Length: 125
Image 1: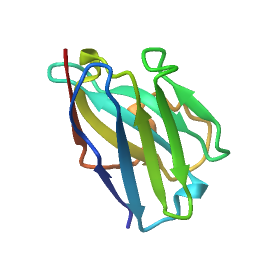
Image 2: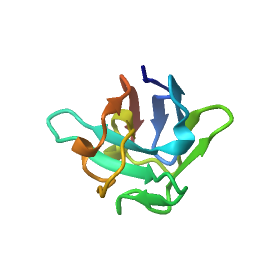
Image 3: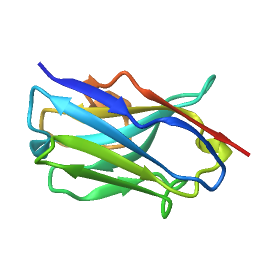
Image 4: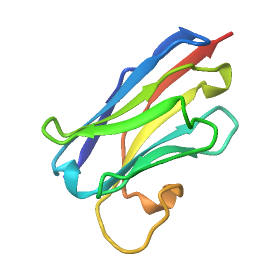
């Protein structure tokens, strides 16, 4: 049984940095696509960054050049390095995993079958 546990959220001022972690247990993450999503109050959940099973990465336009997604297969952990944070980055951040194949679009939340509980990121101006 998969379990994803996020950590690393917090409160920072605009321009600051945070590093989110998502520790996976139950299955080896190196085999699967994973992603970070975020959801602000009153808004829909949106894709932030994805990393496919071949290691290639994808980013939302709003975070390109500021966020970096990576994973440490030895630690079975997914990361999201967030730099130059803006108030509009404030949201709950969730990691997700897709454990089955087929053609899929990393940016759609319905493509993922496992989710973490989320970690809050608050950026003040």
